[in-house]
Image (cartoon, rainbow, N blue to C red; front, side, top):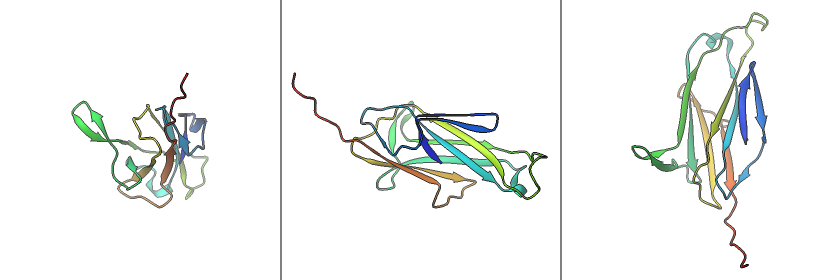
Length: 141
């Protein structure tokens, strides 16, 4: 997983723009999460469900206004991979995933984390944390 300014998947590869940061803002800006999933050989033909949960420094969901009232920031989807004949049997199969997110109304000087879950499971390395810069006071003209 990698935080970046923008990402896309093409030809089975991740294309990343402005990747590898951990500080942003304080002005809201679009962001993206680039993910490379190693799907086990035996799980290639199965449908897998993934979810990204956005939490604050206390591990609580970040809530924003939505069309149906306040809601947590979450992204989810499904994927299935095929077995490429060029990949040796038993090898993990690459599954690139790019999630682009519009500007979020985040507090300045705060810490946030994206947590990934696949098929209801998560691991220690499946999270990305970042900090927003403190707001700066405007200088008098």
